[in-house]
Length: 280
Ligand code: NAD
Image (cartoon, rainbow, N blue to C red):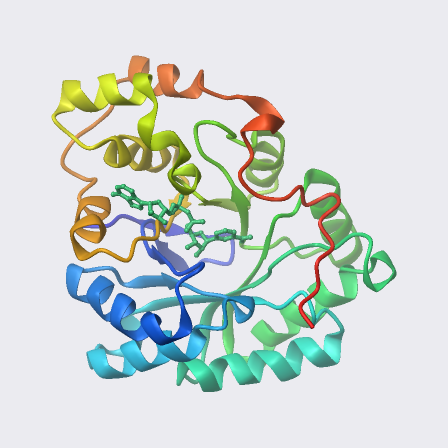
C-alpha cells in the first residue's frame, strides 16, 4: 500500500508515483499503461516532456475513475507570462483528457528571464486553484531565496517543491527551506538517474536486506518523508521500484546513506540559480 501525504492545502498525494522524463511521446501510452497495471496511481509529466497526450491516452484506456489517479504536470519555461500560464494549463488538461489537474508546478524559476519576475507566474498558478480546475499549485527547482520571494510577495506557499535530491546530492538547503515553510519535498532523479546504483555502500546495505540497490535508495527517500516517482521503461523495474513497503532501513543505514552526500558535484541536473533554457 502506497502511503499518502497531506499537503499544506489539505489535499493528499500518494508518496510514490511514476516519472516520465525522457519517455518518448510515442512510447508514453504503453509505459504509463504498464505502470498503471503494476499499481502506480500517481503520474508525473510536464509540458516540456511533450508526452502529456500519451499519459492522457493511458489514463483514458485504463478505465480507472479519475479520483483514483493523481496527475501532475509542469509549466513550460516558455510560458511564464500569466496569460500563457492560463492558456497552456488549458492545453495540458486537453492533452491529459481530464477536467481538473491534481498538481501543477512552475518547472524552473528562470531567475534571469522574464525580468526576474516569477512572482506574477506564481500568482497566475494560484488563480488556477481558485478557478477550480487545479487542486494544488506548486513549484520545482526553487532555491530558498526563490521561495522567500513568492511567499513574501503573495502570502501563498506552494504545496510542494520538486527538487533534485538523491544520496549524492540531497540538496539540503533547498529541502530544509521547503520543509521549514510547510512545503513538502518531491525528490526528482531519486536514483540520480542511475548514478547511485553502482555505489558500494548501497550495494552492502542492499545485500543485507536481500534487496536491489534501487529499492534501498528509494526506501531511503520514503523514510525521509519525501515524495518520489522513479522512471523506468521496463515493467520488471517498475514492479521493483513499487515494492518498497515490506522492509525498513535502520537509523544507522539511513545515516550511512546520508553520508554519501558529495555536495554540488553530486548534481545530475542543472543549477536552478543559473539555468535559463527556454524551448523554442
Ligand atoms: P531517476 O532517478 O528516476 O532514474 C531513472 C533511470 O534510472 C532510468 O532511466 C533507468 O535507467 C534507471 N532505473 C530506474 N529504475 C531502475 C531499477 N529498478 N534498476 C536499475 N535501474 C533503474 O531519474 P529521472 O527520471 O530523471 O527522475 C524521476 C522523475 O522525476 C522524472 O521521470 C520526472 O518525472 C521527474 N523529473 C523532474 C525534473 C524537474 O526539473 N522537475 C527533472 C528531472 C526529472
